[in-house]
Length: 185
Ligand code: IMP
Ligand code: MG
Image 1 (cartoon, protein in one colour):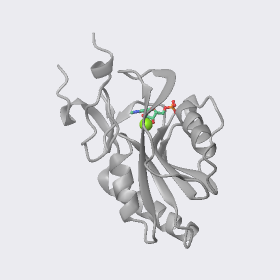
Image 2 (cartoon, protein in one colour):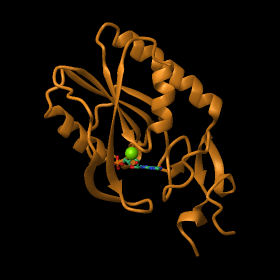
Image 3 (cartoon, rainbow, N blue to C red):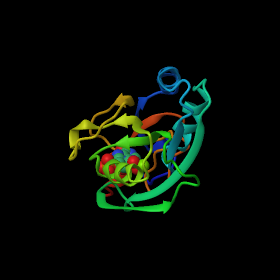
Image 4 (tube, rainbow, N blue to C red):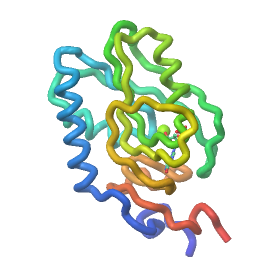
């Protein structure tokens, strides 16, 4: 069957809507406690974190600011290219600020390492990471994850912001793509 670009291409739901909402709410409570009085800056990495970021910020009950970066780390397809570049930089300085970087998936950890190095050079007061999905199976570099939503197996997943060739981001759950979608024939 040809790809539809939507729900018919999903083999199975890995994390459903209610499970996502409950975990994001818990992360929001934890971050609200940990950062009370610190006026943190949350940095969302576009585009994959857009949905997670919007839900997480609404689950945070303390003053905080939001900024975005866009990076390009994957070629079209599922294989990591190794190359990461900043496509859109932050609007504000983070020097002396408490920064929480929000990522969608940590897979090899190479993207995270690059972005953390880049942000650390701007001398924030603190720098931590909150990721939605952690895939430990293919980790190549040590990654400090203060907050993480779910540990997931080594499967290519889409939905809730995550894409395959820029499709499927608008699925309200995290699901596993049918294999024939990315391995045609
Ligand atoms: P890393 O540099 O290998 O850790 O790759 C992390 C980035 O790859 C994430 O920010 C995603 O953009 C992308 N990525 C990794 N695994 C998946 C997946 O299963 N679905 C969609 N994107 C993924
Ligand atoms: Mg990403």
